[in-house]
Length: 165
Length: 165
DNA sequence: CGCAATTCAGTTGTGCACAACTTAATTGTC
DNA sequence: GACAATTAAGTTGTGCACAACTGAATTGCG
Image (tube, rainbow over all chains, first blue to last red; front, top):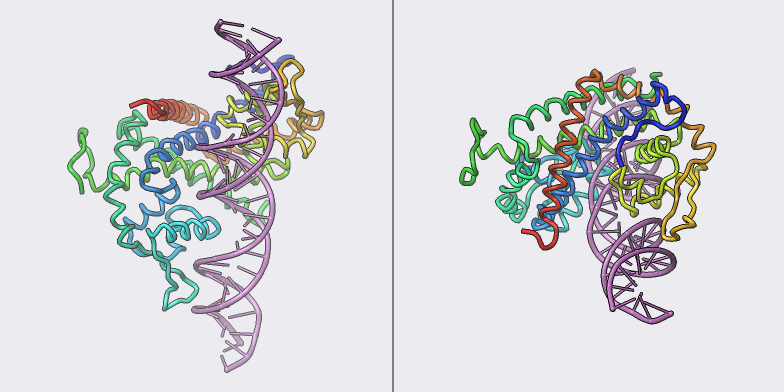
């Protein structure tokens, strides 16, 4: 079912690359979606999706923030955040209001209900950790590796920014 | 803060859990999206998105397959694959035809154009590897870790399936 | 001041992920 | 052969990710 040797007459070294390639990023992708599945179950009680949960984490930690800052914490732009925040607002968890000092900016803050939800979220991390079956040290090492990888990829993307070849 | 839940050796303060939690899965998520950004640039020339590229990898490796098998390789269901395959078909890269032996099944195969595209994809892995700045050994270790994690998460998700504890 | 450049949020359009459902074909059991 | 259970693909609806764009507010510079 998995990874049978490359077909065809004498698979060249390049054939291996196309398979290795799949394994690098695909494993990452698959792990990310597997996490998504577990979070989906745990967060259903709270009425949150995983990205919404991430936004709530940021607000629980930092309090009121402009949309821009939320996006910087989460690596998301307004195209993703605007509708997401509207849904959180519709759910009564979040307030959104134009800044008086800068009318371009919108401050996002917690409602009482949103603040209260934190209590119910407190045991999510423990249950997630249990689902991974990994110890904290392994998780820490993995995180460090992934963050380095992300930084490298971001830099590579920048080097390909408009104007560069 | 809560009652200390099963503190491991040198466990962090309970208040850190909501932040640690973010770091585990968020790092994964961010890395996955960072990869997406690099792939998006590289694959633009080929006219493929990253998930479409994954499907092409599977077909280049295994040849003609039923949709079901493609989904097993990629951990995707028909709700995702059906429209994706239609787009690949519209792009002329893929053929789809009902199996004669089992009319429920649809065989997905490469067109000549789809087969030819492989040549132009050959240097994608190298360029991705360059963008990561990581050596092959590190990548291999990371992949092993991620696959273990995915397996653990899948199992945990199964244990929460209907009827189970 | 006047006004071009920049910044921020939001909108639109495309594509992926997944749950829930539909439809059609096949299989197992009698 | 009849028929319930199962299986495969597809459809629908919701939400996220991101590119490209709009529009309003602010800033910088002469």
